[in-house]
Image (cartoon, rainbow, N blue to C red; front, side):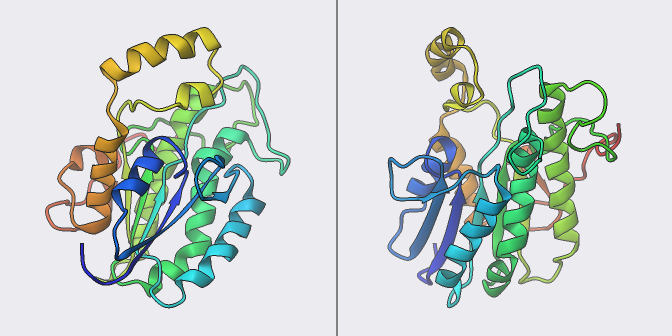
Length: 258
């Protein structure tokens, strides 16, 4: 890393992959702001399904970035609403859509001035880069017809791909922010518990996951690589900018259409 001060914000950084990224970024010349739902480590309390809280967080942390700007924004929140019925937040937004997609869009939008103040800032969304599914552009929140929690979760992955490419198309100068959407694969975190899986399934997965899933620290290393240099794992990254050896990847046919 450069000896210049780098300011980072990690959303969903109090556990799992986000916490691993926070540890990996620990450096005398790095200032790291963490936000999430856990109170076990110093962090800003945040329920990302609330757009009011996302707005409040941005207003809280933006003044800290007045001098150096925001060099890196990591958005590691994402899961599914494990249920047969559609659930809305108290703001009237379908919960999986709010968690996986809308929170990312809102936070990037609110923090864009800080990202633009930093030279060559990076935004990394961690979810399903290049591995999303179809979604209905006229029904992003699955309010029409029958609700399917798996389809909604997969669809939001493709929405993030589209958002990543759109943002990059609007920021094309050499010093503009760069945008990435990383697919980390199956990672050994508490996501099954957080998604509301039955306790017996969660207990079984705690035994199985270390054997089949990726270590959060390994994924954190890939995220830090995207934040600080180039991209060696382009098979798992959607990007519309060219950095080092990471050339642009196009979203697959069928994305964005039902």
